[in-house]
Structures are given as C-alpha cells and as structure tokens.
Length: 380
Image 1 (tube, rainbow, N blue to C red):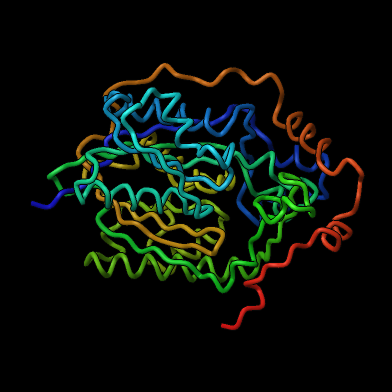
Image 2 (cartoon, rainbow, N blue to C red):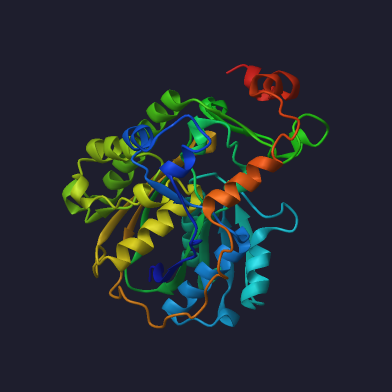
C-alpha cells in the first residue's frame, strides 16, 4: 500500500512591525509609486525577535492545528538562508523550544526554495517509512543582513515564518508531484557577500553585507526555471492547468508571478498573492501564502495546489499538493510573540547605524573586500 504525507497542520509566525514603501523613502531615493510599479510590494515585516523565535511560534500553531503533541514529533526540517547561528543548527533550537525531544533536526538552505526542498525531503522520508510525521518550517530573518543602502534589494525583502505538519496517511494527499533543480551557471547573479566562511579571514565582516543582484538575469532565469518546473510536474502527474485550483508561488516579484502564471496557463484569479503585504520573505513566502490562503477560504477539501519557486543558486522547483479533507485547525494555539517596542523604521535605522560605521562607499567596499569565487572562472 502506498504511503502519503498529508499536511495536517499549518501556522505562521509573523512579526507585527510593518515597514512601508514610504518608510523606505525616508532613507532611500525611492517612492511608493516606484516600488509598487516594479515589484507589486507595498509593505513588509521587520522582526524584533530571532528567526528561531518566529519559527517556534509558527511551529506551535501548526502543531496545535494538527493536534499533535510535540513529544510525538519525529522530524524537524528548518528551511532558511538566514540562520541565527551556523553551529548549532537552528532546527535544534526549535526542537529545544518545543520540547520535541524525540525529533531529528536538520537545516536546509537552498535560499528562497528552502521550504519547497524541505517539504519534498520530509515527504520522501515519510513515504519511505523512515518517520511517521514531520514539521517543515520556512523562515527568514533578513533585515539584519540587508544592505540598506542598496535600493535594488532593500525594497524587496522582509522577515517572517510559517510551518506545516506532515503525517503518514493511506489517503492520497500531500505532495503528489515534485520537480527540483538548479541553474548553477547563473549562481553569481544573486550573491550576498558577508555571509559565509569566505569572509572570515579578512574582507567583509560577517553580517556587514553587500548584495550582488542582477535583476534582469534573475527575472529571465526565474521565469524559465519555474515555468519549466510547473510544466514538468503537471505533465508527470497527468494534470493540466484547468485542474489546478490554486497556485501558491514564491512571492519574489509581482511581474515574475504573472509571467509564471501565464506560461502555466493559470489565470491570476487562481493565484495566491501576498507580495503586496509581506514582500519577499525568501523561504517563508510559500508557507505564509499557504496559511493565508487557508484563512481566506481559498483552499477547499481536495484542492489541487501548484507551488513553484526559485532562489539563490539558482535553485528552482515546483510541487503539486493534493489537499486533504480538513481546512480548519483542530486546535488553536495561544502562543504569541512579545510586543515590539520599536517601529519597523526605528529597527531598520538602528541596523543602518551599525553597518559600515566608517562611512566608506559601496564602490570602495566592492574593490577592497571582493573575495573571488574559484568557480566563477572554471571551465564549463
């Protein structure tokens, strides 16, 4: 008998502080109109707590939704590219906070696709019989790593988290189709200098980042990668665009989402959009959008969902998810984040004050602190 990994719980952990386009215009040469026209974004969240705190809140809500005791949890997959620490891993921090002492704990970093990669991995482990249940998290705490002087990226990203619970089931539900890939030839088009061991021995101080972001190249490759993954996963499952009830895409940019929907043949009325209120939360965008879709009644029993995404690397993928019979929580969690004592703009200005205290220009930093990538000049 075939085993499935049903999604039985879901929850989000969003910080309350909102950074608007008008807030960004107080220190960047930009405007609400400029940002909205190019990205579809109006606001994003800035966290006053750690990524593990956001992930733990989302996890508590997802476990309550599934009515699953943390003590019974067997696996935690923590998807993120902005961990609180490299060692120990962040999944172990969530395990400790939940009291999930039986759970294995691992981090997955494929940038913005980390949740999709994590969801497919946990599904496969349940299908193989290795574990009976799993908690899969998508979370990002990007604001401390952001280069707030770079308008091309500072307007895009936000903080947040969401999680889902998977449980073994004999009923066809959960992830029923998976296509994952990586367009590594273009990995240099999206690069965050200042995160990683390359910067320990001189160069940029860890956390004091400079972002390489080739918007045009990323747009073309993202649309191609996600569209191709969508076509392949639908073909393999024997379904067409008319069978898709809702697309829950990575929320990188409204124009990208519109292009992928067009190539997939799905009208925008059947696409879940959260980019306008949360921006790009990297690994958290797909699960947060899924939770919001459930809250808004856009996921019904038996719905067929298409989840495409792409991220740094350039990783890409698309999952087909068959929803089960339940679309409401079994229990509600009373867990909440502590109140924020500063506004989002106040928190961002505090981060900006800590970044590059010597006031050096971006061009000077690029020349002084460039750490060459040995793969950049490798033969194809």
